Length: 348
Ligand code: ADP
Picture 1: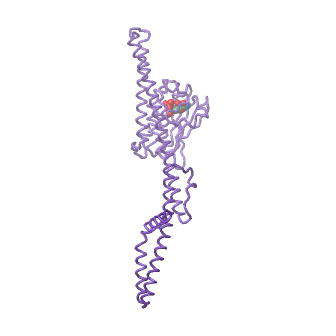
Picture 2: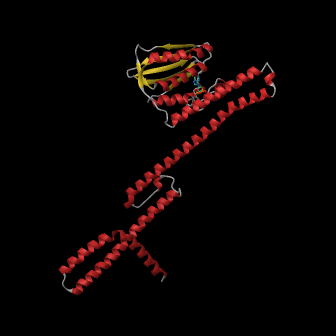
Picture 3: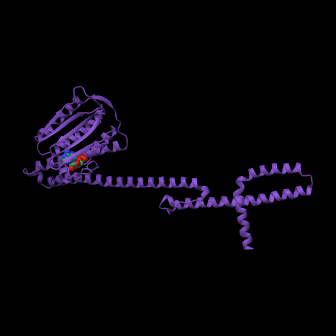
């Protein structure tokens, strides 16, 4: 009894699943019965045939429904498997031979979903790291300023031996803080795609001469020679002047900051389709193990030294973004104790 009811339930389920083909079946049967009606005159044979046709139709619909149900169940179990994360590899997803192309589609979707999730996790990790770095970077100058102000309020303000010095130091930290905030605003604008670029041709000699004039006092202060070797007369390069200025200023400032004695040179090498811009210094150099990381946000070879000289750790990350926005690449060569050379190309 139980078995009979189970079989009946299964047949019902199969027929219900085969309902999608009912229209085609009815159409085919109507035509068949219509033809038989004209061909066979004997009523008893005709009704037997019609009965047989209907019976085999039911058997056939049951078989089709059964197959369809099986395939749908296999697809359902794959989808629920994906939802429950039971597959490790796309190859673990298997469907019957008939559903091979669907299997491939699902495998590709699975792969894409997996890489999207990986990417989102990576972004989340970067975001958390960035937030931790920003908080740390903000804390350093704020704590220092707070420390100096508290000491001054506690009485040091009346001590002429230290009061000016403490104020100078607090002031230096507010400058660092403001530099950090400006760099943070720049980098978030660049990374969110809000930075509008405006490209045009400009005379590179005039442009760099101007920047060199502006940076000269900084070099003089450190008794470092700042030299520009001009390109061939009238050379025009293509780029966003305002953004490039930020890159030049960051690179030249670094070159001066990380050079104790000697010179900082800016050179242009004219190539067939590009102008190669080189900023070379005779500074402390960068250790080989750090050279690939200096363009990362907040990465510094010597954290204390960078902070002491007002570095934010974001300068080269900003330079990299700006140069890449020009479809170019920033390159660096360096030798410890000898000097460093940063270069990039701009279109002629
Ligand atoms: P920072 O504000 O610390 O200068 P940057 O992103 O500009 O940050 O530079 C990252 C790090 O790369 C610096 O902390 C420094 O260690 C190293 N660096 C950059 N430019 C030079 C250079 N010209 N010579 C030596 N080291 C450099």
